[in-house]
Length: 460
Image 1 (cartoon, one colour):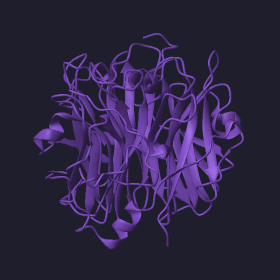
Image 2 (cartoon, helix red, strand yellow):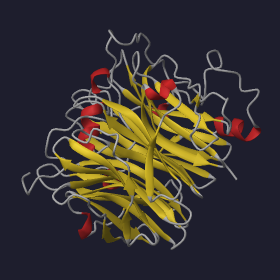
Image 3 (cartoon, rainbow, N blue to C red):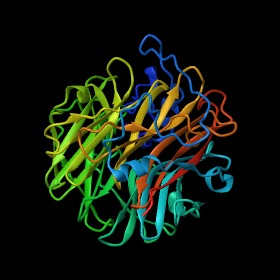
């Protein structure tokens, strides 16, 4: 293997999306993979029948079309109040969200000092830079000053770690997985490089959680071009990290395998990802651990989930929720829940409407239920629109889609597409973020990508 080989230099299987039928992929793909996936966010007629287009925006906020959606009479008061709230698209700020290069938000975190967004500033013709945005209230955002340690890096996830009162951000720098800490979201210090197993390979770290106590980070390690294995790490303080033992005995390690997200606490942890079935095909995969140091791949009980792509997982009050997209008979949004630590999964009805091809990229608990965000590739009009769903905190309620016609979800000005990649809440305010393609030749081809932010006041 060449000594200068790095994970993003060789041919890559797009495990993040089914590009040939136009999906987006998971919530935090690297920018070059995300751009490739979204460029074809449209349906192929031979796979899916898509005949509708967007109607004109309503004169007032209409969270759902009452003629096509399940009745909300059974929803809780809190959830109903949320549904009637309405999203606000924050005005584009070129100085904070744009500039000459491409800016994408990969993840959001909330802490005592406010909200922090992390991502990447793709600098054409030179090294990329990690990017951080900060807001005290979810409405007023500013770009955090560049730090020398951000060069040649991308931040993929962030969490507030109350145990040591600090934000923990994980990402990739060159071919290394790296960790940054900040007490306030503004001043950052790179503190660690995640341990390798195979010298000369590369680390791609995807997600980090506060495991209560302790931190868990997950991703994969590249063994060579087109060959990777799932990986996980643990830390008590964010500064010192140890490699966990992920069982790879049943995996085809000659091809790509990896973990994309992790959730859990108090002795029950689950991670979702993908496992190679051939050089060009992958299958969804689920790993389980009781202590975060030893992980075993477990069977996915739901048949539909075994035919889908798993993009994100989250847990709250004993309920686990997975989201993703179908890979069988076309493309559509999918969600599942479990109340027994992932032994059995129940498919949740996801209202998708007839706009195009919806994809769930992130999920987070909010007061009164759960929130999922993503995007929808409209079919007759060359646009990609942001997409939002809400549910109650139980296994049987359908996920109600926020009105796809609302202006806050549509591309603004000369933009041809806008995508939500992440969402979080501090209990009162919900914030979503992602990116918008401006001045595109077509969809996200030949674009200037800028960061995009939304806010939603649930109320006290």
